[in-house]
Length: 322
Ligand SMILES: NC(=O)c1ccc[n+]([C@@H]2O[C@H](COP(=O)([O-])OP(=O)(O)OC[C@H]3O[C@@H](n4cnc5c(N)ncnc54)[C@H](OP(=O)(O)O)[C@@H]3O)[C@@H](O)[C@H]2O)c1
Image (spheres, rainbow, N blue to C red):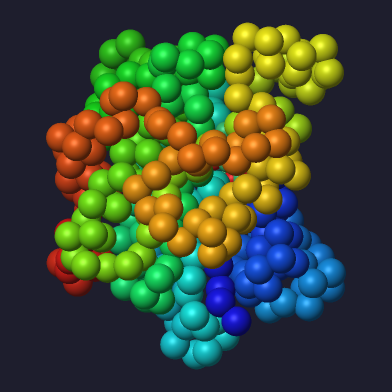
């Protein structure tokens, strides 16, 4: 049976997606994340409910050391046969980090380290082990687009400059707001998705690289760092009615999770590489991302700077993609 590795697959949209991959697509799963107690409980539930094989992998996407360790363990799982046919990699883990500004173990701003750099390195370390028609899905967000209500509400994106984002607020300099850090990290995920798509096509690989926006889903853990009354308000029917009226993309745990699973595994999305899919109002649409996200020069610079930041070693990474 094919296997999907999903980061943050034990909670929120990721867990719903995991259930769909197990039940509809009959994928075996590897749940990767940092909260092992919750991950083990989710893995057991999936095994019991769907009779699939589920492995677990300790992975903190904000730490380059943890990503390297997890990639080595995953390769060992493939070598030992615990996991076979590595079909899908879902870069789904992510966070919205409010004040105070914080930095990862490697000294990089937490949002950019968690949402972007960890996944960038994970892909570099694992892509060579994927099957020919594998799929990599980047969970992005409509907030990446400053021309939409999503982008305006959460924070207009800053320049997707990896070095500046990793060092945001250092040396007493003014830092970006939490909303801008989040939106910009999601723009970077789309730029990675498109740049990877171009590199894969140049290398004549048939692996797909796809960007996905689940839409606004306030019921997940994503907004756990905002004040409790605001969390409560965001989940009310009244607030959903308002956000819909102003044009915020409307997701739901069930539909958005199922949509992520579709993009990652459904044969209908076999030709989806280099595209952006959005879950809105119970419809999954192939849509345009922001103007900036199609800027190939920006994407190339982001890719090369990210490579420098993750300190890719000569024996790491895929030769064609470097
Ligand atoms: N909910 C929305 O409105 C919305 C809208 C657009 C895009 N998204 C994106 O959808 C994805 C899933 O989010 P969600 O809404 O389902 O929120 P969620 O319930 O908070 O799930 C996020 C997942 O990411 C994991 N994670 C966070 N930091 C991590 C780290 N350093 N290392 C490993 N795993 C980490 C979390 O694990 P822990 O349990 O360890 O924290 C959790 O499993 C995210 O990329 C988010 O940005 C969400």
